Amino acid sequence: MSKARHGSRLAFLAAVTCALGVAPAHAAEVPTQPGPPQSQAGEAIAYSKQHPHSAPPGVNDFTCHPDAAHPRPVVLVHGSDGSAYANWAGLSPKLKAAGYCLFALNYGQRPGTEHYGMETMTEGAHELDDFVSQVLSVTGASKVDVIGHSQGATVARYYINRLGGAAHVNRWIGLASPTYGGTFFGIATAVTSVPGGSELIERFGSEALAEQVQGSEFLTALNTPSDTVAGVDYTTIGTRYDEVIQPYTNVALHDPGATNILVQDLCPIDQTGHFNLPYDPYTQQLVLNTLDPTHAVVPPCTFVPLGTGIAGVIIASNF
Image 1 (tube, rainbow, N blue to C red):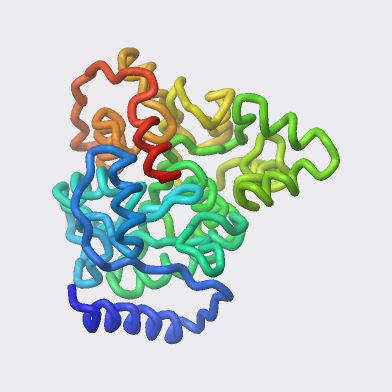
Image 2: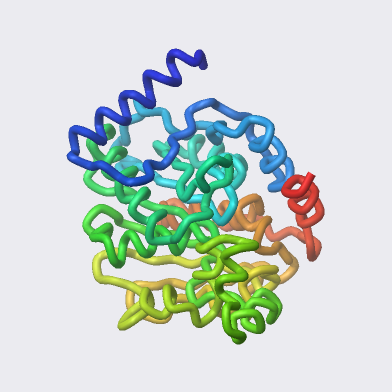
């Protein structure tokens, strides 16, 4: 795509935003430079670092209009220090092939960097709110379905539960959602138990990371009095081998309207973890089944070794 065409699309989105009367303090980036499909999280992260404004395959085609078979656009929300491309370059081609109109944003940008998902989750949710309004306006759809990974799942749930997003969202799907937070192998809870601990996590990680610790004020408020609201179908997909959310049961929602799926309950030999979940073929089919349960397909259950993809994620994230 030429720079001129890329710029014209961003200008078009800005015009839509103005027409809606929205003036966010921090507008999300809308990536439109097409990137190739990926089968591993590490390779996707490495590509996104080299091509920081890439869009996952089939995503952010603003000429796409939903059809009768798939009447709702699907909005993809990345995780902490991630990006639309890094999270969704494996799942998006399958969703596109199934006939969905796909859209994704890069939210929570740390000023002066190419790092996203770094600001507070409240800020991220406001950016998502603006973006969903744009998607609905451009596509003419009445509602969207939202898929979030890790922090992105909670950002999307805050948008739905606290910012009126329930009126615009039919289905929420959370992959490795930090619904009730993580202890990060006990490290985070130990740090936050001492004075100034949360500030240390914010300093060396991000504000959003501190908000995802088990027992954080943010999560406590979001889940009170209910972690769901009426009118939206909620589905969490988690893994017993989550490297971030411990205990892994903290991904589950507790209140009405929620379905909680644990990969290993259905396929015990799939030991995929937190970072690999969006790239795990079994999980990808579960997402497709959740979006369109009338055409659900039982995915083949194949062995996925413990720690799959972790080395690639570490190398790509740090070198």
